[in-house]
Length: 378
Ligand code: V47
Ligand code: SF4
Image 1 (cartoon, rainbow, N blue to C red):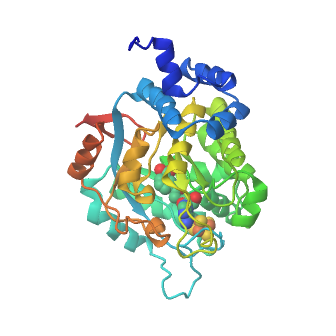
Image 2: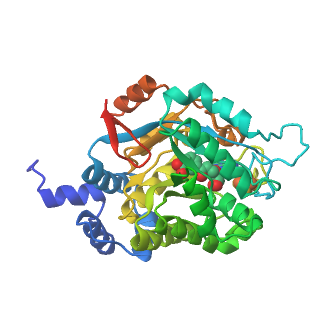
Image 3: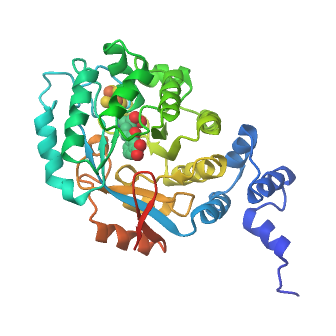
């Protein structure tokens, strides 16, 4: 009996394609870098083993980035957790007067930044949608941050925050973005996208900006030279078809603007919020989602495994399922995920720890700037 497996047989064995002609055709497209349709993605997602999805996603990851795994030195600034909206999945938002509500003044925010300024290249500013704070407040905040720290990249405000401050000030979103850009806004984070299916959105975050608005704001940013990220909140009441459709909408916008730096799947965490009765999805589901995102989003360069939400170990696993970016050092400056039950209660990584962690997964750690230019390979 021969022990030699011919190449073609090896592919069949690796990818489980032996018995399924349709799957084999889709896998062949993926291997040959041919774009797959929503329907094909759905079939692959539903019918493939985790292992197969991982092999395919990793193939694309290696072609795009080799073993490089990007990270940056960053902090988050959360100016307030007072929010005019009440998203059901949110464990973080509070009403003014609540004992654990906070609303930092600009001076307090500047003092927080001063603690870390010599260790970072990026400040990520995102918080609740405070009913009394308008565009002028945030223009003032960014100008002061920019004045003190001319070289630090400012990535700030979700589309939902931008929508609210523009409306409150009677400006179009494009006008608001330009005003912020003029005083220091460098890029926009990906939050607020949740899931683009507006029926689902109505149930989980009915009162805030809808999907069309989120997309309009990111398109306006891209057209005005401001790059952004995109997220998807998964693992609540959405279906797999909703997830693929979300990816498809992002891929279409990226075809038009090429303004997204990275896509970030955000796993729904179920502590202390109105959807707590929903079980969190398994790590298998997380990894399948990372893999299908890498396979489907052929035009977004980076896929981020956001470790404060996934936990370090699971984020490391995601690096073999398509992810190439580990976000940043964070230095214990965000509360969104610890309040929602993440096991990273005080998320913080020193650069040395980050490097050791990424090397333990057989990856090459690469410090990047906020636009993914290489700073140094470690
Ligand atoms: O929009 C809120 C999510 C987002 C929960 O652009 C939750 O680099 C899971 O967008 N379970 C804000 N997710 C955070 C965000 C982000 C984070 C890191 C990096 C970047 C980037 C963007 O957090 C919200 C919402 O989708 N969120 N509550 C929860 N219970
Ligand atoms: Fe407010 Fe954002 Fe929480 Fe929604 S997810 S309630 S917009 S802080």
